[in-house]
Length: 355
Image (cartoon, rainbow, N blue to C red; front, side, top):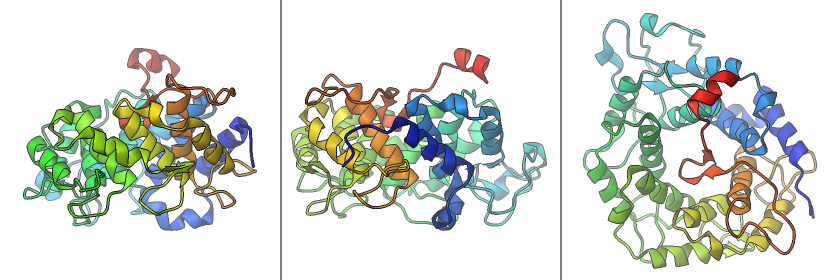
């Protein structure tokens, strides 16, 4: 079992996957920008962004933007934002004024969130983002009856994950005109469960990931006081998920990503001190792969999501008041903006000099 944090190996792992993804990721090509999100922000936590060609990545992300149709913006109203990758064969760097909408060429709310985070983390000022089109498209994704969001305008599942993405997009752009906040809060409250947890949908099983995106959505929108439950019950549910590492649901095995989903929620609630940091750190370290990256469970293979979220929890732990365990210092990582899941964005005045 690993007892040290392999910083350089993890940096190399993210760099390698950012440059050339292994074959198992082929099925996720439609969400390539989300995979890039994990790699880039993993490097940001490690303080290794200078190893990237930032301008090249920024230009690539902008090439994924879906602007309004050049002839008739109503043709793709609700589709604007960022697509997940170049899988549709879109022209690289097509000027927005020349864009002509195509069938199935639509943004995805998770991709838009990931793209905006990447741009800001790399020091871009979002000046090339069509903010009005993005926020207007969010209106088409919200279910007017339930308050929930779907991922695309062309029809998809609806659940709490996409509520979070819509709130994060609105927060980053500082424009909430695309979200019916009252309906959103009603949806979150409809997903509260008898055990103190929160599900992805009304009536769904309580889940660590669902709890985070629900609570983070309320924090982002300034609506935390409208949560219709006793926070002590929610904290109890979260604390009881720790079994060394954290599980995502009752009677499940610990999984490295839930150190973040549960630990981050406790951090937002000001209760991260209730986490048994030494035990969780030991579990996370046991998930380190010999050649870099972190696995879901010990003795399996790493992936970029579990690698990033493991580092994200280590950042919370190392930068908290309880940032020391049984005498050994936790790894020094960049401070995390917990509600956005990423390191704090650089100031634009400083970042513009580095670009």
